[in-house]
Image (tube, rainbow, N blue to C red):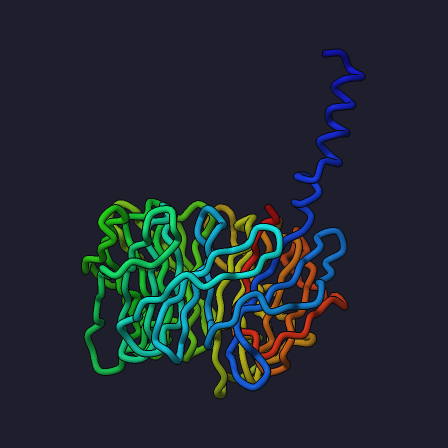
Length: 366
């Protein structure tokens, strides 16, 4: 092939629909339902300018406060917090519309977080009320939830499961329990869909561990303390399935005295250079931390509060250029541009109205 043909091929690839599609992401937004919200909404993020299209209802369902995708991107799963169920939906590749498939009981009160394991064989969920977690098998190829769940009840007086995640090897599941001040660790068998007690990591007393994020290499974990407004940085031993505390930092500016409030979400930038934590009322901000690439230590480098009101959840799209923040109280999702060198967040004028938004997830256009 001569140079002219090579250049022509590159030009064709650059302008092909598949390449152009990478400049747009479909955004699914979980909500608390009521008079205004009816379920899960969708809009489109344009990566060229960070703009958002108007939001439309993707699927009607009760209180889908957290959602997750199947690895094949054909199915979406949601907790139904008030109904104490987990629901499965198929995704229309062209329209993004959701079709209800089935649901299964969460076996605990107020399910609040869920993931799909990397093999696509199980949905794992955490129950807030009563403190528990479970693994629900998926019916092969159909996307439906099976009935033979592996359920684990946390033990203690103040049990509040708040999130569950699996490590990169898919061998261990880690469940944050806010009331117990522990991350409870289970051996996870994806083929069998079972959770088996393995151990626990104790966070500082009164921290209230809520959500959990991995570094890209899976060797570090970052946990936000909902109650004491902290970020807890840990080393992770994948062979032993064990966390070791490395550092604890406040998510508030140094001149702000902690009085009330709570954190909500923790997100690591795709580059692995920054980690972010959301502070809710009355602080209403995103705390920004730089990650030393040699020592792995965190350094507080800033806060952004412009236009933020009760940031229950936020997410960074896969290219790392934009952050979308769900303002639960203000009924909108707003966009920040991310500085790739400093991690700083710059407000944009982009936003979309969504009633009571509490979860943001990105789906590549197919």
